[in-house]
Image (cartoon, rainbow, N blue to C red):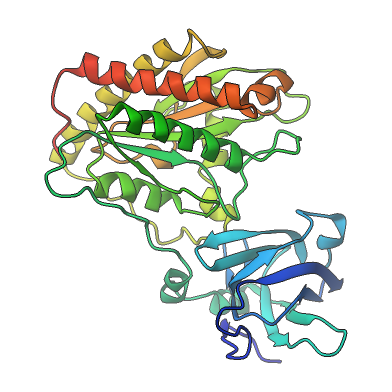
Amino acid sequence: MVLFTFVALFNGAARAEGEGQALAREVRLAGDAKRTRLIVDLDRAPAFRAFTLANPPRVILDLSDVTFALKPDGSQMRRGLVSAYRFGVFAPGKARMVLEATGPVAIDKAFVLDAVDDQPARLVVDLVKADPDTFARSIATEAEQRTALPAAPVALAPPGDSRPVIVIDPGHGGIDSGTSGYSAFVEKTIVLETALALRDRLEKAGGYRVVLTRTTDTFVPLADRVAVARANRADLFISIHADALARGDGRARGASVYTLSETASDTESAHLADRENKADLIAGVDLSEETDEVAGILVDLAYRETRNFSALFARSLVGSMKSSIRMHGTPLKSAGFRVLRAHDVPSVLVELGYMSSPDDLKQLTSEAGRDRMADAIAAGVTQFFDRRGAPAPAR
């Protein structure tokens, strides 16, 4: 048996120039708790690479120029060494599948079969049960993990443009769909549509330069979202999400605005932050080497000032939203969201509503509801700059 630390296969015959993207049509598992085989049927053979990550144990498959026509999930994809799987866009030109393993595993074989006669092309990955030491030796190296990550999509301001910079961050995206609230809709689509509508309103006002962390259904790591704000010396960072309660957890509804706090304002806020902070984990990103760059007295002073501006903006938002948007009973909240941790950029996270609430979901998925939300947030931005009447915190 050969244990693969990192498998990379770039098949020169996989994609002729100009053919576009391969289509993954079907996926299935076979085997047991000792050896499990993943088979993906495609219309032609793709280039791919496969590697393992720890904490928790996962198998990552990155595929070049592949789109999916697969069922989101199913009981047939919980078998043997695999407890769950996800798929979606991970970066431009790259798709990703994440297999959650039941324990330590190793990639025994990983290969592609070209289409022959009436048989489709097939990606085959054989997983075997491994002991903890073997698994630890087989996980991808830090350098290999980096090559699997997309670069931060930073769009810098042109020289001489002194307008305030507003960075809008539509949550989730690509392989990370966010919540659905047990509906046919997904959070990543709702928040992107709202973010685009908000961008249009702010740009039409003419007094701001607007940057989005994503404009398409693409995954962006949490750290890269923060990097976009800092690289653009943003005056405001607005992360947009939608919440949902688990079945039986109540009938909450309404929008909320969150600021950063190491101590959550309530239990629900703590659970929400915990879910949102797992976005990178869901997409198959290793967080074991992540460091905290916020250190030093001067940074701490800037951070305190930034938190004051964040609180001011949050109050402005709630004030402008409550006249036209249904708000949560306690609309101002705080929790430890990783995406709000830029120490020099005033940042808030807006939960548009609860996808688990039929009334909220109707508003979130309607053009009229989206327009009201975009108008209200844009008004909150204007109120913030009117009230602040002072330069942005020192960068």
